[in-house]
Image 1: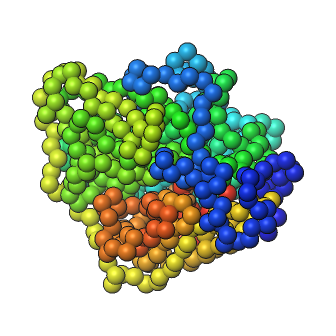
Image 2 (image 1 turned 30 degrees about the horizontal axis):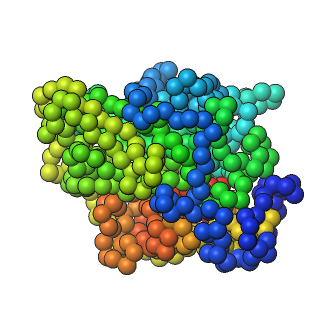
Length: 516
Ligand code: C2O
Ligand code: CU
Ligand code: CU
């Protein structure tokens, strides 16, 4: 049992078992828990239960898409750009006419976009003016362990003896890519990200810029996520302890994940973007806690994927629809040149129903001549091969193997997260084969530090349609299996890998590896 963890110190009233569940169901019995008490909402195509808003939601496509501002450096020197971010609460108007308290980087949601150049160090000083500890993780970053936002390596709230600030140093020795930063505090990542602690961090490099892809106003990051709103306008989330100070976890029926009924893009509900008859580059990010999407352009062109989590593909790939799990990024080109002024194209979610089946709308409002290109060859992408493999490991992500207060936890190889225990010690520079399996519901698996390539998926010797290129997160269906080749490069030290369903992560579906 997990006496070191707060989850066990719940007051008697804290976690209530859904009807029909035995408080004594042992480890490994996880399968029978799923699907009862609304724990798995398969209509929404995602593990989790739908939480409805207590306020009326706006009509879709009435709010203009915001684009997060680019953060300006406070200073620069020969090889480094320095930034400052204050994390604080703020009231913002997300639903027209209603004020929502968010926790935001610089008090905005999404946070400001940080833009780095490959090879130039980026130093971000975070100041914590929130009432809780925080930890900042650059998702997809090749970052030294002491700057990676380890879950227990927190910045305390400012006040009293605590200075409440901390410098994160990013080497930025990595390819151009769409990264994002978000909270990673032990046990409370789900609710803290849900309140707004997420932002984009883009990396540029010369090779990418030489391609002539659409840029400027036509390079748009889209952070897609779901939220639910309480009667007072606040985000509705089923925390056991809404102060987020003592007891982690969500009430029993949301153990599989929290699904909101309102889709936000860049913080706005079902927004609309005016576009021209030209090519656009959209950096799609699914920053939802538990929801995954099947995105399609209704009445529009196909997506031309140019990049994955970790940067450019070797060549573009066309998709009618894109399956995007939590934390994944798809860098796509959408060509509106076949459209006429007045056309409307809706980005839909084929996994959703009702409001969650729609995401945002593009409205073609003007003609534009376009000199951007999408070259047939985008980048030299090294291919990892079996011959490189020095070690093989297997990990099963499932519900079962450990319990707290009668609740069966989410585990890796049957074990809940223990910050002290190391499950793998890859050698610096080594390539390993990891076989990852998923049970009970789907699990998007993310590995810190080390990018990987998916070489097999669900019994096939290929990555499947959505796992090309360098990845840092791979989506597994319930019963799914992925074979990945992963190279541990850059830094020695202790890092986590985990499920990026944030409710699963908070309820222990995480483990440590140490690069030695
Ligand atoms: Cu995006 Cu460890 O997380
Ligand atoms: Cu990460
Ligand atoms: Cu999971």
